[in-house]
Length: 67
Image 1 (spheres, one colour):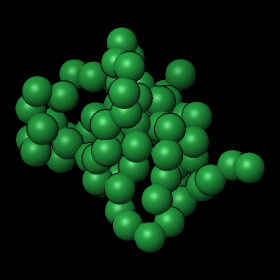
Image 2 (cartoon, rainbow, N blue to C red):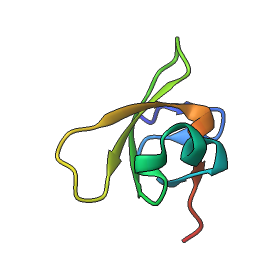
Image 3 (cartoon, rainbow, N blue to C red):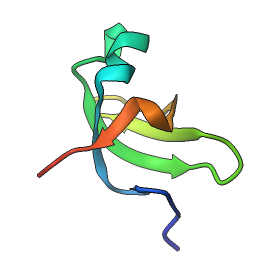
């Protein structure tokens, strides 16, 4: 089952966008994969490269990374 909301789906690569860099400056240069997409809220579970546990962010803070 693939969960997809707007432009985000579980398994896609992402990077922090400009808004995310302003709101979360310590995560500004990080990227990773989407591991959970909420259907009820604006949250997205992401696993940053090198991390073991997911972080939950607002979906407006990330953008799909070009490969």
